[in-house]
Length: 346
Ligand code: SAH
Ligand code: SF4
Image 1 (cartoon, rainbow, N blue to C red):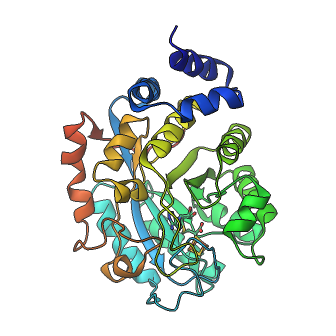
Image 2: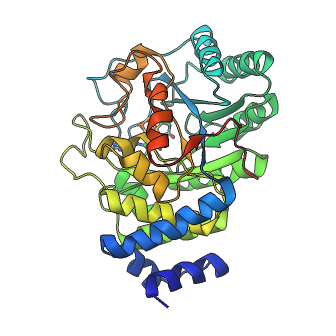
């Protein structure tokens, strides 16, 4: 049998892949890489048919107390306008998303102390009281473990906290000393233990990243068994220390997407905005490599303009939900449809 298919088959069956085999997949030329993408895509179709889950992304704050070296929202960046949404703003946007037929709302933002536990609880209660069936995903960075517990108890369903890298030394090259690799990883295990549908993930092609790092990331994913994994290319932002590093490349992202799909055929795997920002058909390619989730921005204009983790982000110039409106058409072109369901991990 063909070596690519052989590796895919063996990894799918054993959930174990040697470093050599991993490297072989990562170094495939396009023609052979297509076999990897197809293997992953077929698994997605087997589990989800041609249906893509939609998550409505609401960016709630461009304030952040952290200083991740890669991110445009880092505290030290004086060029960002700092804006945040109130509870009422968020509830209005949630209503708008529900009207569009969206069944999951993702609240994402910098680490902003304005959102106290009490305030967040009011927001979550507000959404849940009005729209019981709507799933709430939080992506608000690290918080006290007791906060995580209370947020879960009040009704939040999912939490996305990318681990960024499973190598401590690599983590320390991407973050200042004030941030702790151990706390990041402990937080993710905690979220999972509490019962959140949990997402980890990493940027592909972040500065100093090696194939070894990616292999470790994969093994971390195999150990954690998250319900979701967020993967996108690193994209430099001009007002960060990493302004001169090159962005991650498309085929590396697609290969990792496929490999993660093979690691868990039921995992929820978004074709991310960052992927769509490096190449016009990035998200479509992501789906064809095994992704099954899209997270269109349904948020507020004042945030879109300023919520720039990286440069040239798509969906920032549009009026309001236009990023969502074109999706159905885009999906149709590649033979996929929007799923009407909430899309919990099964
Ligand atoms: N503050 C929260 C959520 C917002 S950032 C947190 O950090 O978890 C969400 C993700 O955006 C980060 O986890 C990171 O992986 C990604 N990101 C940040 N800067 C980026 C860049 N320059 N290129 C690509 N992705 C980036
Ligand atoms: Fe803040 Fe998240 Fe950006 Fe880090 S990645 S600076 S925590 S918004």
